[in-house]
Image 1 (cartoon, helix red, strand yellow):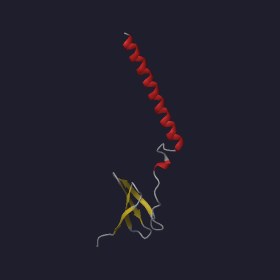
Image 2 (cartoon, rainbow, N blue to C red):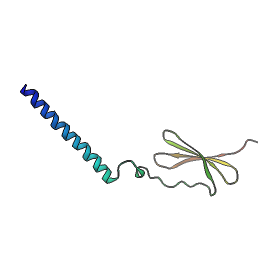
Image 3 (cartoon, rainbow, N blue to C red):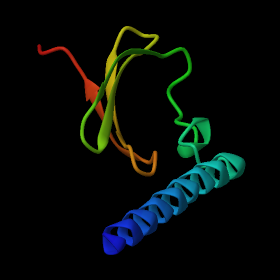
Length: 97
C-alpha cells in the first residue's frame, strides 16, 4: 500500500509539472507572436496588370491559382507557390478561332 501511495504522489507531481510546462509554452509563444495569426505568412506582393481583377481563386496542396479578368476583356491564369508566394507561371487564355 505504501508503494501505491508513493506512485500516486509521483504521478500527481508529473501531471502538475506537465500542465505548468504547457501553460508556459503557450504563454511564451503568445508573447513572441507565434500564435499562427496574421504574421504566420508573409509573402511579397503579387503584381497583376493594371485594371485587372481576380475573378476566381483556387488553392491546391502547395499552389494558388488565380484567374484574372483583364481590362481589355481577356483572361489570364496566374499560378503561385503557397510556401514562398513566388509566381510560378502565367497562362494567357485566348478564345479559339
